[in-house]
Image 1 (cartoon, rainbow, N blue to C red):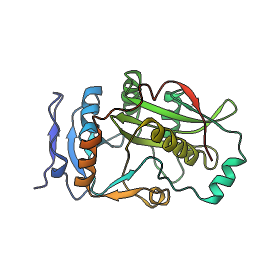
Image 2: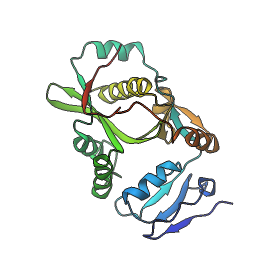
Image 3: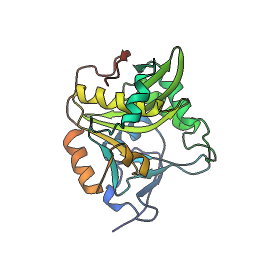
Length: 236
């Protein structure tokens, strides 16, 4: 039975994702806060926050769910040709705050951003605790693209990406896939399926199938320190 839950500021358990509404698709709970423990509990159960600046905190678990298997990203010949011409470099956790700010910047055809100052502060705290991570794309000393998300066991929960030069965010995704594959990750959660993600190789899984995979991999082990601040190479 679908039902909407209302959270207070106690760190109570989230309701099961199976109770999420079908309209709007995946809305499960309202309220609570963005305390790091609550956020980690949410991702551990397949739930994530998404709300506008004037909204209360909204918690979601949509059906279907967009996922990648690390290494499964589709790369067109034109993308590979473009990337081979660039002198871009890539890094991990070198500029987390700047990446989040880049993702929060206004975009064409969008009014405002869901990555509010509260969201930015919450994920920066998760980054300082070693849970949230970024991948950066550089043109010389200029940050031109990147993405960020959370690592939950062998699952990487992607949050957002941005670019200021053509294909920089796709390059970030490709480097992320290669890195996660090497480090023993099994699944990338991309949240809500859309044509752009499908064009990159994302699969739409039924929520129950996604939750089953999440339960299988969320306590798994990866490389001892896959998120040390470092430069990484794009392999073409």
